[in-house]
Length: 232
Image (cartoon, rainbow, N blue to C red; front, side):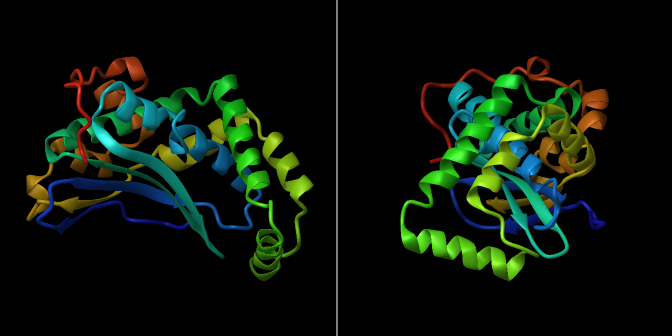
């Protein structure tokens, strides 16, 4: 993994919603652990059944959109988490994200989460190859950016072979360190951001759990939802 300098970037915008994105350097496109990273990202924020989506949107109604994403390049990559919310909810959203990442570092995924993430990824790959153009595009991309061609069957097998231990080890490597933080919204300076946001650039997974008691979901009680979705 490349070295990085965690910090906080504020992009002032006169808008009604705050956009929060946090991340760390991750794996290159040729790293064999990329399948474990795909499973980790899917379980954390890859859909409606993911941890972050359920915790932040469904259970607490704090954000309309919340997801995680990965990008892979020749020599490095990135793992990031995004949430769009009302400015009044930004601090709580940041704290919940920190808590969930810390819990993943400490406890990994459950067997059910692992199986659901693997099934979602495999299903998405298969559904995305239903026409000739998509299949040829997949072949071309892999010949251009990889050292060799991987068949669909081999790729699905690699995803299904990912273990909880592999995901847990990768979570500890990637998430147990300070995050790079970017916020777009009605803020002129980082001093105007909630402390929970700027703290993400200082606290890492287990470090956050030690200092703030954020090692698992039960450690943080979010304010009750008001009955409407914030952040639209």
